[in-house]
Amino acid sequence: MSSRRLLGAYARNAWTTYVVTDIEVDGLNLGVNSMISFASVAVDEDLADHGHFTINLKPLEGGQADPDTMQWWRAQPEAWAEATSNPRATDKAVTTFADWVRSLPGRARPARGRSWPMSGRYDQVHDASPVDSVHPFGDP
Image (cartoon, rainbow, N blue to C red; front, top):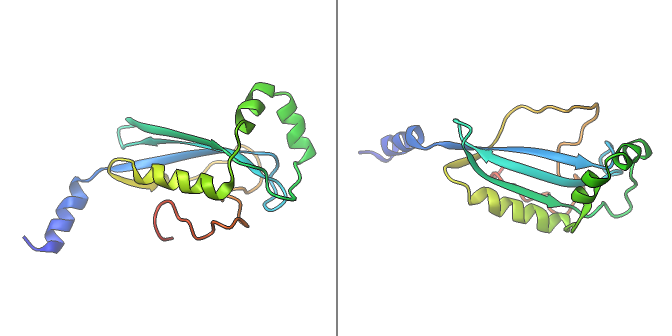
């Protein structure tokens, strides 16, 4: 069998693991506010659970939390405590996340489509971080 046919057969028979991620923030402005936590679940096409990942992040150096967002967090003290305990440096967190993604069965892919329950845009791990070259899902 040719390598092209073998690769095609592999692709048809290999399953995909989807990684669905949720983030927590202290505001909606990139470079000013911080992503404080993110968590992912890995599922296959049948929604079988293949693992969970969660990590809390240190705030951006020089960043400021949004007062309105912090007012909301003050009404959620248990969630705030969970989202801010044992924070890790962003570069270490992204490396740990990438290792977790690479350990998943099948071919891990980010789930397509996004939903924000609030206005704003905060869909990258600290845009100005020193880990811009780390791509957990391979090259962009």
